[in-house]
Image (cartoon, rainbow, N blue to C red; front, side, top):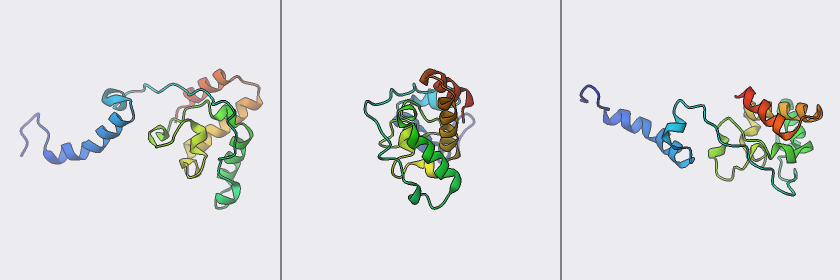
Length: 142
């Protein structure tokens, strides 16, 4: 039995996966616990296109998802300059929000990713700059 002020082995082992994820994501323990610190938005990659964005036929008829993926296909160079805020950045191969919409990315089922896509698309159509879109995404949070 743990003494007052000490963790039990069970408590330690239960917390261990979160510690490992925080350390492996490059954010460190302090940034991963109770902190609102976020990573910087990535720079859009030169020549990026929508060729790897999942096709509508592969989205199982989910109308809302198809709409979000179609929006991303229209502006991949903008979406590639936005950081996702739902935790995707810890997934291997992640670069930007665009990564969430490629191949088996989590945007298929993630309302945060899809919501960001809708917001970014609307702001782009309104003529907002990438910096303004980034600020709006940051303000929207998740």
